[in-house]
Length: 309
Image (cartoon, rainbow, N blue to C red; front, side, top):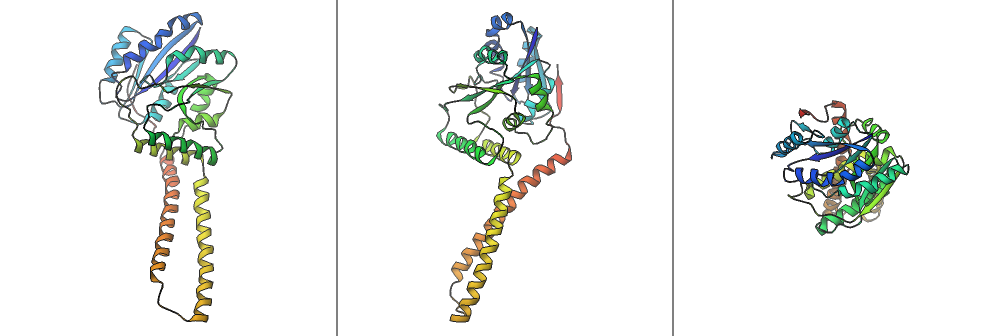
């Protein structure tokens, strides 16, 4: 009998805990047919509602349900990593509690594993129901990552993924503090089948991902899996140095021929502001990489556990 570990990161998802459990075990006949045992791991990421209480109730009814609760909110990436560490299964699947990752796809995903794939990943082919601006910037992010990173990050990719044990072990071997799971899964490689489906509306509650949080998350991905911004900063620095050298020659020649007029200070101010802005921009890029290095060398734990059963 194979063991399937279902990892469900949760942050203020008390309304969805039971619904997810019921929806998952609608596949009970499939699990029985394929001789698959299931462990359901809810990772409570420091929720401020009764998410943990709802999981405790389920655990009292079904011993296959487990809870790992953090001491505070450490973020979804930490929750995913903790779930992977806790999972004991031969197969492991990452899913969201809000049912935007349909459990009904599991039989099809398992079929591809039987065909020999190491993992089965999902991607949304539509973003119906999302704000237009968010969808636009999401697409731009994936296009940008495709151009600046050697790691494959597929447009519309979800965290919803069924993996064999060797893929899980490969991900766990990457112990970096600043985690970007989509990039990590692309970096480790292995033979992956991409399964497409249309966007599914959230079951209950509201999304925890604001535009600002998504923007910060995208920066995490860019800094974690591309050094091109540093190259851009260096090229811009070299360009402005060369431009300054040329302008010095032009000014010297102009002064020798036409004298030294006092006009032109507005353009000079604009140039100073432009160059200063570019310098600060490049310094910000370097600062992003330096801050990530700073957090890595501290060797702080990725998460702290408050409750585990």
